[in-house]
Image 1 (spheres, rainbow, N blue to C red):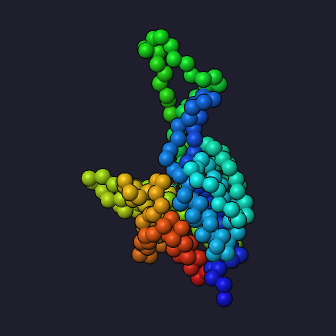
Image 2: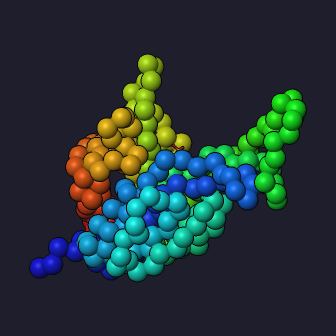
Length: 232
Ligand code: C5P
């Protein structure tokens, strides 16, 4: 039999980094390459799902063979597209690096430098909506039959006082999602790299799943884990 545990399932994946415009030529962005999200979308397709990918800004070519691809730029655009596409999805994976803040004001014309350094601009930031939390809040309205699985990603560095996994557990609880895939960001792993180690924390208390390999390999492991949850 074909190895397609996600057959008949609809999977939504967000990928890449959002950009928050300051003026027509400048933005605040982040270093997300899109690789992990693209690997998730490709692996979900390979495992039999119908896949919708919402891609923000990325450094690599879009995967082919997916069912739907939507391009967005800012966090607010990503939010609009994601909340609509989540309706009817069996699995939603938020792999996109969403800007937590955006400039409070957008300048219609390029911000100019004046002769007086005392006039240098100050960028005031406001919070962006937390899409993952909204997905969790709207979940019951999204879906009548069966549980919709909502998966967050977290890049954690840890510090002296707490380990990345402690941060991960707290984040899982705060966001209310079903799974949180924690990747420990270091010089050799995380943004832009080919390999990853994911620790997949589950809200239902099952032991965390640790998987290491290429971004495609860890994606496949995560998706098989989710398929098992859905098919049980
Ligand atoms: O809080 P933090 O940004 O570390 O959380 C990461 C997770 O939350 C990722 O799954 C990311 O896609 C999602 N997120 C979001 N909306 C935001 C910020 C993060 O959905 N504004």
